[in-house]
Image (cartoon, rainbow, N blue to C red; front, side, top):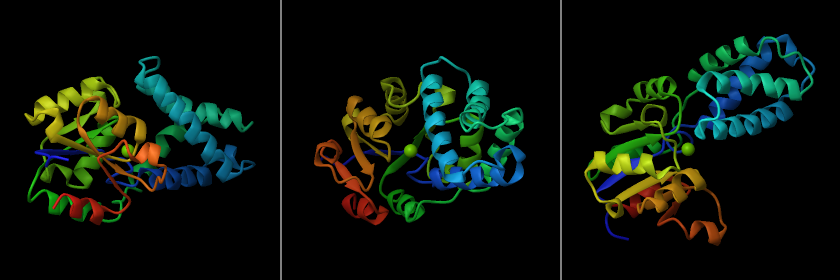
Length: 230
Ligand SMILES: [Mg+2]
């Protein structure tokens, strides 16, 4: 693998723990609204994740807009649980507020950025709502590592679309084969990066060779990534 000249990072569940923040924020609204009283938290949280993922897919295809996504993920999952979903809009808003208070670094991610920024030019590409992702970027000082920050809602394409990678490549002023993409999601990050002709580093505990062999680097701890790139 040739030494990359530019490294782009995914944000959610690569640098910042989105899954834990989502669960804690769900727990928060669960304790606040009466409609959840008869619902089991674990099964609701699984249903919510599934429905949310489906709606994000519709959003990425342009079938629904941002407001639909934000409202329907609660409306549909509360309905599926057989409870009263008349307060889902307000639950959706409270959820987003709670979610913002729950963001934390993934172990070792900050140190890795710190180390790699000494030897590489860095950037970020994230699928997400512009407003939310900008708050994350600000709260965690990500712009101190790079001014190459690409948010899907701003550019109109979501990973794994080649357009968002091509846009990032142009911004970096590097050739695709010299760019490394670091992410946790096999489809959006690894397949997306590979299709754009980039090198890829997969943050995962996946052991299946048929999948792991598709990334140039596979790591489950950030120290491993830093070491490989040193
Ligand atoms: Mg991710």
